[in-house]
Image 1 (spheres, one colour):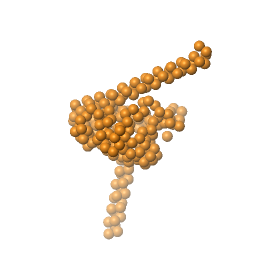
Image 2 (tube, one colour):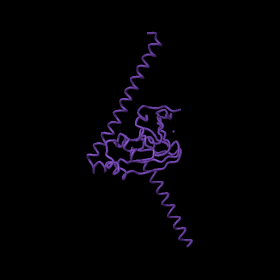
Image 3 (cartoon, helix red, strand yellow):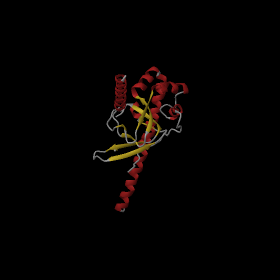
Length: 207
């Protein structure tokens, strides 16, 4: 019996270690807010994942039935406070929805300085660019508190779009909406900054 208990305990430990490693493989440091990372599309629903998905522009054009089908490809991840959800430079593999907790987005510049970009809270989402290009992450995401996240991985979404091309078009339109909005915000901020610099320069030189 002792041997059987040891075997079971050993097997459970191996499964736990394997699960931990899989999670790490799935997604591998003052606060300055960037318009690109701003909570422009905050999801108002906090407890119902289906309603949260429908409130996100990426999926807002889908019917209730379509979103229900989408729930089948959603994964759930828990992170401890201070744990990295993904690192700057990691491959972009999915979109994250915060069910509980807070997440900080930060970037390390060429001088090695860590620059906080945004703080996301329950109901927010981030990482949606990965659904388009799968390029390397431009910043790191860290759990500010213990977090419960829902994740849609790009390969799963690609299969969903391939199986339901008409729904896929609606999803891509939603992603385009986000990108267009954020680009407009960046342009507005750039124009405001240029105007501020011009005024400052004129003041300094007395022109």
